[in-house]
Image (tube, rainbow, N blue to C red; front, side, top):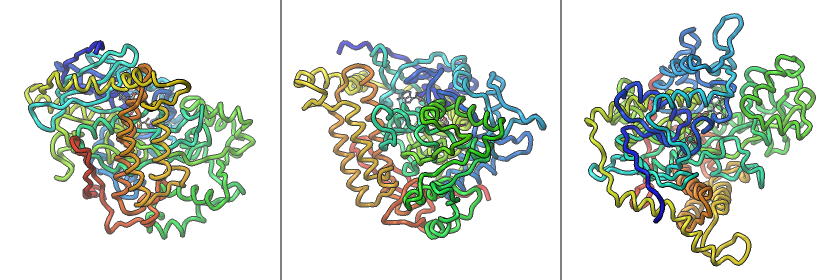
Length: 610
Ligand SMILES: Cc1cc2nc3c(=O)[nH]c(=O)nc-3n(C[C@H](O)[C@H](O)[C@H](O)COP(=O)(O)OP(=O)(O)OC[C@H]3O[C@@H](n4cnc5c(N)ncnc54)[C@H](O)[C@@H]3O)c2cc1C
């Protein structure tokens, strides 16, 4: 094959330079002054990942210096929102370190809003602090750039490498440059995967030319999950997909509206509706409906149920708050710093929230481990806190030796958000450096055969296209290959209809899931025939393959958990109630890299905080 191969030997390889990855690069340098630290990023770290466009609030800050919250409070909050099921050791570990990360952001030039009376950071809610955050990502990227030996932008990482001397030990990663087409081989002693969550695995509400407009970043292709699954890492809580209630069509955030502007919701007839669903919800989930704050999924449940009952659309009542010029300004700025497109949608639809209450809707499901849900890899916890079942090695190390994770990649750690993901990157990097030093720098053994075989696999879609295009007489449909967009639409349709997407009001059951899994397996065979006409399409092909593996994991987990734990995120029609007797536990899966078989098990939930 006439494609150039570029080799890079390093100590720590960071895959994905988003919030977790930049934190990892920064911290790896602190502990590993003499180590070689490399970042491989699909886009450009200056504007990559979920924070690319900026944020208006840092959603996780304890404020311990001002006695605002303690880490224990945050564990209670995350546990409550996830209906009891989080990894409390990981949550506590993140929470005890997150404030110091936030202080670094301010030191590096991120502008914070301050309360004029107290001088503290301006709170939006109990956990959120407000920032002028358009440049949040370039600021943390700068810290990573100053720390890493080398940042490779535009590298789509497709596979992890495995050590051939030591079973179950990672040895680096491979990928290709989406601009030059070069094949990149990174041989590394430790790998930190921080490649974000997954959008576009379920059919989105947006269609046609608008399909790129989703709540979660459309470029988040589930790589963090797929890379880890391919390597044989155990995953946890992959059924815990997230559905967001957001402003319609632009997916503009509602946090500042609810918390700061004190706006509230109504049904299409101007009525309060949440309380109407109290009895119904109580019958499903018991006392969880009485918890404060009401878990996010249960608020979704009321909204979904009200719309299903024929009393939509749901409106956000903005007309009152927007009469105050200061709040009006905050309302608009909130979008300009984070989701400009929502302001554009309103302008294009003649919606001035001062006079018209805008619509809210629930999104298609996404998979992530750092926002309000906690899907991701099963990892070892901190030595001083974690019970035996949660501790087998180094902090944030997966069940594969030398493979660490941060942010969306790691499961069980909801409500970390941007600051918590950066903090997890720091925690993972510190542990990865220790791992390397304890191994006395022993490098993994990677044969040319391993990398050459992967090279052939990576570029196969280009080959499929080259050969197959001769059979096309017109249009884009070929008898011998599938285009990535065609595969994506097929994947989204199956996930939507069988695994609980928008068109079925998030409903599924064992029969649907079993059939869905069969269809996903057939798709896996068919995706061997993806055709890519250029490097951009090659990237799309690999993103699709990563999305498929993520979807298979979601479907397996959803089938395994025989209850409806999070109504409003999804429903198991054959088990419509929450079942604490049998399912107050975490779910684990492992896909055998050789056979492709999935094995499922339960893991205990330890409540380490009262
Ligand atoms: C719409 C939205 C709004 C949010 N609002 C807030 C908020 O207001 N406040 C807050 O604190 N948090 C917010 N968050 C949460 C925050 O953005 C995430 O928690 C955080 O970005 C997760 O960090 P991460 O490193 O896991 O992923 P990301 O920051 O998304 O980084 C993943 C990185 O991996 C790269 N990558 C992906 N695949 C590959 C591959 N195959 N090879 C190489 N690189 C790859 C990506 O390009 C990206 O740079 C929001 C998230 C979303 C989606």
